[in-house]
Image (cartoon, rainbow over all chains, first blue to last red):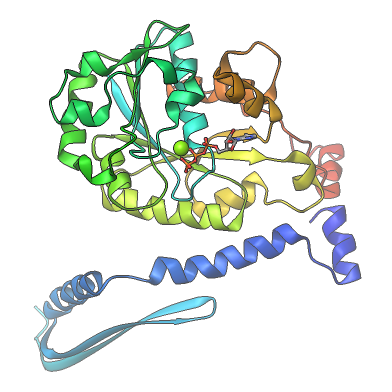
Length: 88
Length: 266
Ligand SMILES: Nc1ncnc2c1ncn2[C@@H]1O[C@H](COP(=O)(O)OP(=O)(O)OP(=O)(O)O)[C@@H](O)[C@H]1O
Ligand SMILES: [Mg+2]
């Protein structure tokens, strides 16, 4: 923090560049997570491939979603398991 | 074998054409053989920035359509005889050229020239696809504004998807006075957000407008301008030299000054 930021904080003000930076950060979380359906499908297939090494997955009942809220994004995967493989 | 470098940004008007012209002249000043390709079909500009608008006979579309050989379309610069411009077509649209044709043309040119700089149009559609098709390196131009940095972020993603990783960032039109009073994002702010390497910072400078009026890129003017110096430094970095960054303003943080006094930072 520099002197100006310190004075601003005391006065309850914020530099316009800090506002810009914060807005950029938020908008980029959204931009970076707006992925195409094909890309989601690709992610889904690869997740299933990895998990399938350990469990038998019911691919028809598997859903993958990207949830975006202000400032954060969550990837949610619901995989229906048919059977768990015996550890080798 | 030469290098093909695309100069791109996403957002319009941030300084791609100005940068392409200055880097081209700067490289030629060091004796490199350079071709500048104006890929902004329909909105030709690089010719006027270079002051070569009265010499155009053939253009990029003529070349890819086979109306002439590449050599016939290249316009030699007025002052630097290793520098050439391949102008854009003005009365055609972006679809007149395909990425495959650009790839082939760039491959052909780099057999003979050291640097092929491609001035990319704004946007992310066909014109962008064409401009990046033949490139193996990319420079991204942005200004210290929310919209320009946001678009740069999008471009970085698209370049990655096209296997053009490791693009370098040019921050253009920085105003030290505004940064100082906290009204403009600083270099560090932008680098933190975009997380790519910086290759140069160009101050907002009226000398750029004056030299563009004359059709003589500022990089060649020995008038002590900061923007000219900034471009000369980028030219050397493009060639692989490591050049210290210009100090456009002093760090005024009291803590960094205190640290300096206490010998904690250099
Ligand atoms: N550092 C600078 N200082 C002052 N003016 C500048 C600077 N850089 C660019 N300009 C001016 O900004 C305007 C836009 O620049 P330029 O044409 O290079 O942008 P561009 O990204 O190529 O635009 P477009 O997207 O339309 O192709 C020009 O008038 C140019 O002279
Ligand atoms: Mg332009």
